[in-house]
Image (cartoon, rainbow, N blue to C red; front, side, top):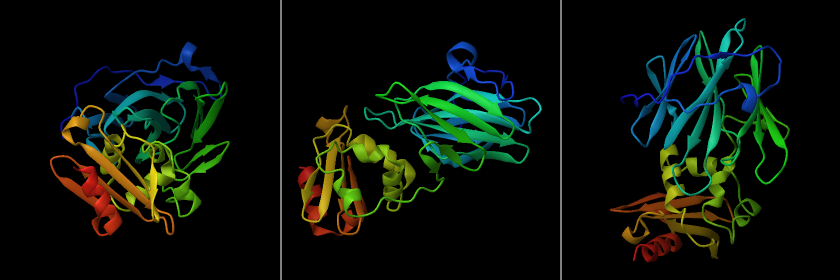
Amino acid sequence: MKAIGVRARAVLAALAVALPLAVEAQVALGDFYQFQTRFGEVQIVGGEVDQYVSFAGTMRDDLYAPSQSILGGFAIASSAEDWVLLRQNNNGNGCFGVHVLLRVDASGLTASPPFGHCEATVRDVRVYPGRIELELSSPGQTGAEAFSFDGREVRSASGTLRSDPVPAGAGPDVLRWLGLHPFAPFDMMAERARFAQIMPENRIWGLANHVAHGSQTRQEGDWVIGSGCLFSDCAYNARGFWALRISDGAAGAAILGGSTTLYGAAESDPILRRAISELGR
């Protein structure tokens, strides 16, 4: 894939050890497609949509989002690593944006699991030897939540975020979505991990966008079902469908457009096949 044209280029900022720096006053966050670290260049590559991260000329297909940007880079001159902060967006009307931290050193690039909330903004950045801390605003609250990344795991006050989150389960993990907007599950990493068992990561983003315009979820037998359409293409039958089975947590999904692609239980379960057929009429 070719690199996207550069929006801007920034010099890596050197931050003082353990000195809390207010972003608004001292850390200039930007919106970059290329960023030069001491160990190689980090780039966002791809097209206007479907974007990946490349480091030192090698694309990382595990670092995908419909659109991404580099907010900035941070380092201590005496430390053996640089830090790069990414923001990933789904390009839809739902809330599906997250932050990712990259540790870059002589051995390569290591990415954190996604963290934060789509409406969160960076309030503060602190860099220590071998570790970086971010404070993100808490939507709907007056305080902020701190996240720490050491190149292995992200920690917050609420616990450690796994790089391989455990998929959501059955029973209450399914029923909690009943009556909510069909986009709601995609804000939770455990639910995205559930869908990752039946479909590629980039199709999860696509499914989320295809239910961004929809009514509340419903129950049919053993299934909680959500469906909707793309905001801009509802009239053209660009629709999405997902279903979670209450008894065992199994998932099924479908994306409808010029053709229909089925995933998981949607390929064979008669209740889901009928619901998808009715959706496409």
